[in-house]
Image (cartoon, helix red, strand yellow):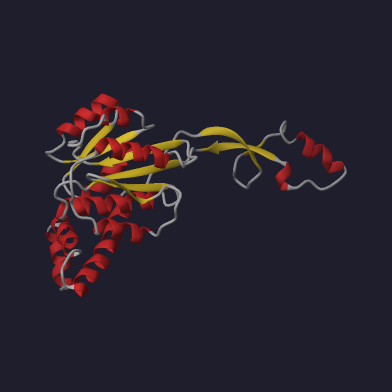
Amino acid sequence: MDEAALDEAMANSLDEALAMLADLTAATDPKLRELARRIAGRLMIDIARSGKQHSRGVGKMTLQNYQPDAGDIDIDASLDAISELRHRAATSSDLKVRGWTKPKTAICLVLDRSGSMGGGPLANSAVAAAAVASRNPSDYSVVVFGTDVVVAKSQDAAKDPHDVVNMVLALRGFGTTNLSDALLVAQQQLQRSRAARKITVLLSDCRATVVGDAIAAAGALDELVIIAPDGDDVDAQILGVSVGARVTTVLGPSDIPDAFARLLD
């Protein structure tokens, strides 16, 4: 692999270069396959982290144990500790402050690998996995579906982001589109989290080809956002309107970070 040629290809068309790399991760030559996976994995994570990161969730005022810069000391809640100053030295754990806290967020990424998956669609999925791992490294899951539904990364399991991205890059298209079961599994994964906000991110055209009530499964989720291919989003828009989900489209993998920003922030 000529790295100078790869740099030139990325400068000319980043999405096409990423699609090519995604295809090369299945090369028959073992050395080329391993090199493509290593380079592609690193690039996917770099691109995912290039998107702007914003704080999420609505903050609320809460009573907390004292921490420097956490907020103002609550005199009423700390009266017992203050009165004890006559008899002993108060510790920081005795004092209470009122400060702003934000609810934690849990994400389940649901990837559609039905039908043909390679090149651009595969690169989209890999960058999406990298984006979720970068945003929520301690509370996210990855569910992959075609005919069957597979939990590639469970909500409460620790996994290196590079391993998650490489796992996604190893995927190839297979089978029908079992959308309803995939959304049910996403709900089960998010139930393992104690986060206040639970979001399912669905990367799919949402064209279900397996019998099942995808609308009911989607409606049971706390919060659903959909990322669909540009020009092939009719079914995604219909599902979004049916359950009140936010929908956006992407032209290629380089659009994924901005799509996450539009949907999650």
